[in-house]
Image (cartoon, rainbow, N blue to C red; front, side, top):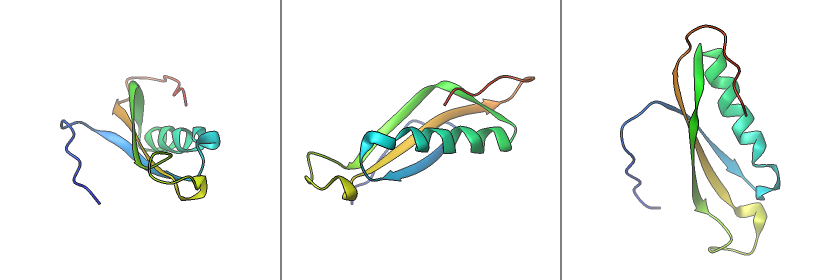
Length: 81
């Protein structure tokens, strides 16, 4: 475990477990949460590889944190997962 310092901002955050082949599901979950909360997802996304190919050759153990910046929605705007 390590401490992670990021600049202050608002984001939806989720952790994906497993191979990166279906990492898009984590993006969809983050975007969906933003929409349900009346927020709009911004262009900027951070991926933090908590445990990945450099750490283990077992993809089922990989953990990737996805943080998608959000802001209050100003009218209907699509979220692009």
